[in-house]
Structure formats: structure tokens, C-alpha cells
Length: 271
Ligand SMILES: Nc1ncnc2c1ncn2[C@@H]1O[C@H](COP(=O)(O)OP(=O)(O)O)[C@@H](O)[C@H]1O
Ligand SMILES: [Mg+2]
Picture 1 (cartoon, rainbow, N blue to C red):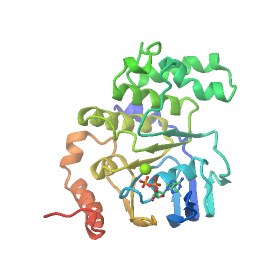
Picture 2: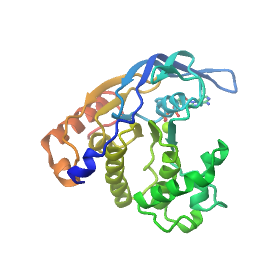
Picture 3: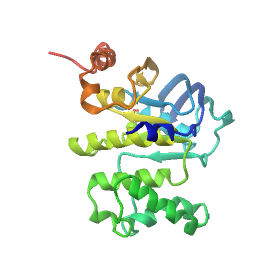
Picture 4: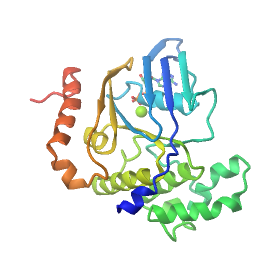
């Protein structure tokens, strides 16, 4: 990315605050499942926050609380100092599976949130085409999801999340189902996109290296009930080129720090 592109970065990110957040689910058998325990966090506007943790530790719960889909049992969540009580119009979500509707074209899938909100679809279709161009899907708007590869479909799902210019983008293991090469390209493209848009991102992943590569800050969670075990600031210059960054001793040091937490939890065992 050129310096010119960098200067385009707009401060469009939301400030996010979680205060004393706990979540206990009640199962159908009436049992309590303590998913999150007393989480306190603040995300700076425009920051890229990654969250890693073992399966079932409450990562997706954290995301659905911020998306306004699930209410917390205790505590409060704020976006730009406003209490979250329902889905916020300036929050976009990307999941591991693209969740595209197979009978709608790619363009119509991207415009779905606009249709649901009864906004003017025509006004947004130019923007949708522009987004497709930005993610390398120029000319694919009239295709059906089944005509695209997994990586391409996930790019379309990202466009659908970006159509309303979200100040906060929530991503739940978005590249988890992709092959290694596609994943690498998506990571690089996401970095570039975020540096241009300047929104706040919460990126949930199982990949320690992916988290360190992308984020300003990596949150490491404990097994359930999820707590923040480590809040690690990543001080690597941006833009981060793939090879140079992975070869940087600082990068390895951060990866090792996160790995050590998993080792101490007994989640990673080095024989
Ligand atoms: N709707 C639900 N009802 C009951 N338990 C749930 C529900 N959603 C999630 N859980 C439980 O809460 C815990 C955290 O889940 P989740 O947030 O999906 O974890 P992660 O995304 O880290 O794998 C898990 O034990 C899961 O089984
Ligand atoms: Mg999950």
C-alpha cells in the first residue's frame, strides 16, 4: 500500500466499552452455563482487536453481545457511549460460514441488509459494485453464490457487512473454513481494507499467528467461563508485509507469549 492510500484513512471507528460483563445461558434442561465472567474492556476507535481462546470459552458469545443479538446477564456494553440493547445500525458482522442466500445473486445478497431496513436499494447498488471491485470480485455481481469459490463467497459476505459502512466490524473466525493460500490473501486484504476504512474491528480467531499479524491488540481468553487472561499490545509497524513481519523476532516473541498462555492452560502440549 502506498503512502497515499494510508493518508486516506478516515477515523470512522466506534469506541467500544464492556463493563462487568457476565453471561450465563440457561440450557433447555434448565442448567446454567457460565460463558463469560466479569469482562471489562475498552476498544479505542479505529483499533484492530483480535481475540483468541479455546473452543467454547465464550468468544462467539462476546461477539453476539456486541452485535446486540444476545443480552448480557450482568453488566453493560456501549458503542460510542450508547448502551447496546438491540442490534446497532453501525455494526457489521461476518461469520465463519458466509450465510449467503443461494437463490440470490451476489449483488442481491450484498444489498439484503439494505432491503431489510427498507432503505433505497438503488442508491446502494453503486456502492455494492464498488465494494465488489475493492475485494477483487468485479463482474461477479450477477453470479449465484454456488458459482463462486469459498474465498470469493467470504469476500462477498464481507461486502455485505461493509455495505452500511459499519463503525464496528465483528468477525467470528471469518477465514476458518478457507484453504491456507486463500486465507493468507484474505488476511492481507483485510489489513489493507481496514487501513483504508479506519473502522474498529473485533476479529475472533483460533489462529495465534493470524491474530498477532493483524491486530493492534490480542486478547487471550481462558477456558469457560471466559475471562481475559492476557491483553497483549502488538507494536509492529504498518502496513505489515507478510514475509518481513513473520520473520521479525518481535513477531515470534508475541506468538510465543500467546502460546505460553495456552500451554499454561493445558490446551497446547509440546511433547
Ligand atoms: N444459546 C446457548 N444456550 C446454552 N449454552 C450456550 C448457548 N450458546 C453458547 N452456549 C455455551 O456457552 C459456551 C460458550 O460458547 P461460545 O461463545 O459459542 O464459545 P466459542 O465461540 O469460544 O467457541 C459454550 O459452552 C456453549 O456451549
Ligand atoms: Mg465460536
